[in-house]
Length: 312
Ligand code: FMN
Image 1 (cartoon, rainbow, N blue to C red):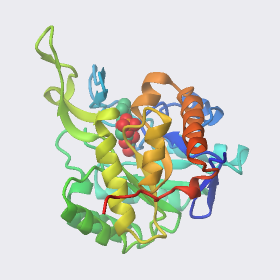
Image 2 (cartoon, rainbow, N blue to C red):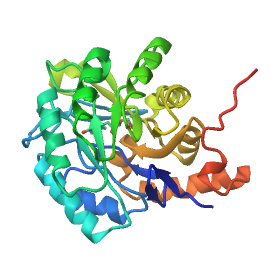
Image 3 (tube, rainbow, N blue to C red):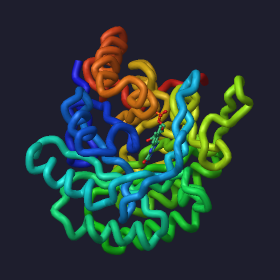
């Protein structure tokens, strides 16, 4: 069985990769991902300057996933761009993703100019869905703002790019967001980022599990699976077929990945599970996805991508 997949002209020999923010903070972590069974990798969402993020504890493991309010700690765009430029020299056949998350439109555009002017030849993921920066609303939940950001961005940006979106819950939101996204030369849409602003409580102490924002944080892991599936499916039905989907959210085994691909995903990202299991998770997921495909008689991702059946 072949797990080969592609986005635009970019080829990957495995559908699995990390989700931004998980085990991709330092060059050592990125190297570990590169050496794992993952087909590619994405860097930690970068701001222009290095950020320390929110106070700890800011991540907690939950029964069915995780809660976090990291507050975008990162080494700054220059660090990740430098990594990517070195990486592409060493691995010309392994395109990677650079994630960018400016806290304002101006910051996003400034970083986009830096990338545009660089020799970076991979894909850029603009994260419009960072829920954990106090006082900053998510761009992805403001449709006019999203339109404005993308209009300004694509007035000069010519490198292959996509957006990472928050989860939507209303069919009218899918219609509106897809109508906006279809106006731009996006190569991919990545759904979903964390389910924003959940809350979990320690039963021993009656205290919120994490410190920032009074305990509110983004939820990932198995809790996210049905929402991720719906978002990938809804966008696959509404986006121009030239825009590929990356499915993220709730992957804990090979069947979860298979389901995201059935819903239309061309690549599958792994967040919480990777945090908990480390890069060896890709070896297990690869084996499990292959096993599901073999049971179904499929030998390639294209045999079942987008082939979800519904009851009539
Ligand atoms: N998503 C981003 O786009 N940029 C980030 O910097 C980022 N940081 C994260 C940090 C942690 C500790 C976690 C758990 C998630 C983070 N996310 C970030 C969200 C994940 O990329 C992913 O979209 C989300 O966790 C859902 O996937 P999962 O169910 O596999 O965890």
